Length: 66
Image (cartoon, rainbow, N blue to C red):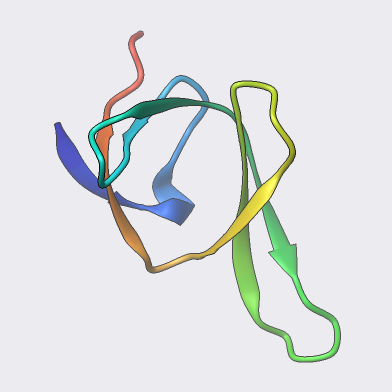
């Protein structure tokens, strides 16, 4: 396991949540809010609806398998 920022996540990474459960990253894109210019990372897990997170927020991940 290692620490990564949301912006560093790639498809196949496994996010280890605070309660120890895991979620597989399906897709990662970028979002820029027109009104503020704020940038965020948009992550879709296991085919669920997209979720947005600040780029610099750090999470624990298991790197994607090659």
